[in-house]
Amino acid sequence: MNIKAYAKINLTLDILGLRADGFHELGSVTAPISLYDSISIEKSDSNVFKCDLPELRGDDNFCVRARDAFFARVGSAQPVLIKLQKHIPYPAGLGGGSADAAAVLNGLNALFGEPLSAEELFAIGAEVGSDVPMCMLGKCALCRGRGEKLTPLSGVPKLYITVAIGEGRLPTAKVFREYDASGAKPTDHTGAFIKAAETGDEKAMLAAMGNGFTDICASLCPETREMRSRLRSCGAKAAVLSGSGPAVYGVFPNAQAAMDAAREMRQKGFFAVNCETM
Ligand code: C5P
Image 1: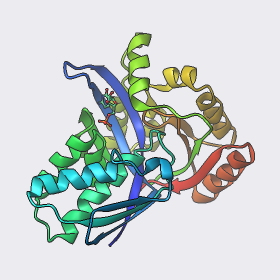
Image 2 (image 1 turned 60 degrees about the vertical axis):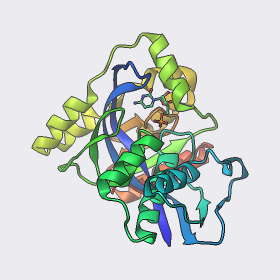
Image 3 (image 1 turned 90 degrees about the vertical axis):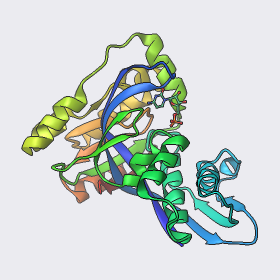
Image 4 (image 1 turned 120 degrees about the vertical axis):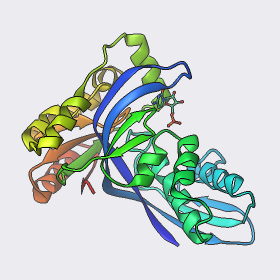
């Protein structure tokens, strides 16, 4: 079975406060994008996990954690061969690991005759990582709580985007820690975006897009600011940090404009790929 594990972008992200369990209360609107990792899963004689990137072959890989969590819930382990080909940069704020876990959970459930309900799968997903349920949903959604409480969101048009990332990488936990230490005040991009989506006001949606981590990421990884500014110079209607960064994306009027921007960003030395929301 071959599965595409789609990355996500955060159209909005607000960090609303630190919770007693050490996680943060979030408000976010997310959308899957057409940039994906390729995963194959098949029944096998022994449990094997292969990845084209040597540094991702450990037992802490999201694919392995998702596989183990799935069979722990089902109550009987079956050996499987899982192969992962990475295309989504990491750690980047694009949900790459979560997308892989989501694909493995959905894939195993299909391969073994759907032993688990959708609710059970979502619950296992939330145990593996805060963004896994959202990746399992595979649609534009309002995400609350740790990120795992989902409300599908309609009224958001397809967006033509270019995702860009430089040399720097930012581990999620570090960005949350530095954000807390900075004493930044919570933002409210999400409320404004939802209001705009309800009335179908595309201009207001673009204006509401934003990320509460923008300033802290710019100080930890200054190229995030530079990339956003370059995307705007390429004609982006909005240029926004995704998740905890350091990937950013620009929103363009059409696929051709996004493709031209990606080419220009690559010429400046960044990794850049044009894609679209799904
Ligand atoms: O849930 P996940 O494993 O993706 O989270 C990675 C890290 O990001 C957590 O260990 C935590 O430090 C931070 N995090 C958080 N609040 C969230 C989601 C993640 O503090 N809502």
